[in-house]
Image 1 (spheres, rainbow over the protein chains, first blue to last red):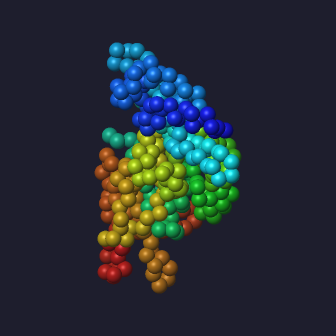
Image 2: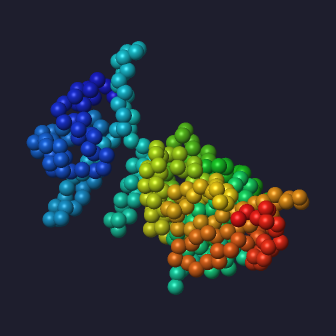
Image 3: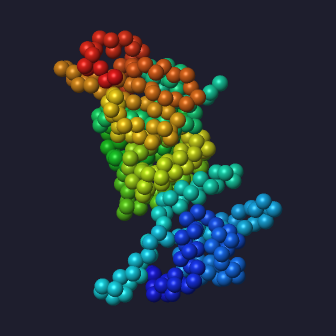
Length: 111
Length: 241
């Protein structure tokens, strides 16, 4: 599934930092502030990363001033690049078990 | 007044001052053969038979057929019928570990848990469940989240734990702190067989008898004797404490 495109995406400035910071869900604004990324670039990187399933829209949370904010979480644990046979890029996704428990637990507090 | 979920096990509910605290998670610890699975089977079986409460049995250790045979051998004759008509829902190891894919069974399980039709749940064993997590901090986080999910969905839960109560060397696992109750099943070899004991070491919110009580496993399952003095008849070096 993964292809060389992924390397291109990861290679873009700030992409790896965004993945590193999204172990827990973060909004674009938070990432921009925390990592010092111009906000427009931040949105662009988020779009690229989500297109390649490296990052996922985790939730729409309600902010203090009652606006909906999108928060993102990384969907990947590890990326392997293998040159031995032919170039292969494999992506190890986050454990689905933990994702599902997180999801079920999160909906508890919504009730 | 704390609401309790009666185990229906002779003697045990008295020690527990009525039963296990409703919607809590209790760890049932003991060596292999101590009777952990039996206690769990009985908890679900009595739930249906005596209290009209439905249950879910998650077994990473056995398949549904083995469970039923174990139940019938203990005299829980209607186990098969309860499973058939849905009063007891069994997720056995074949289903849970199919293609190493716990996550798809987890979807079904979470649906069942949220469906609110069930009152009791058994997880056999916690150690297997923890294999799905990568490190101590993940294990801790997800055990807490899972027990939260169970509690919020009004399930009273027993989880088995392969851990003997060998004093004073027992290493107290994190699990013991993260759960609401701890029940130890203890067995000591004797010339004629084995002596069995139950010790309720902890039950949050509930006033319990913390002595160690003798118990037996026979037709009809576990029976706890409320005569703690049987212990004093043991010689010093036989005593598990």
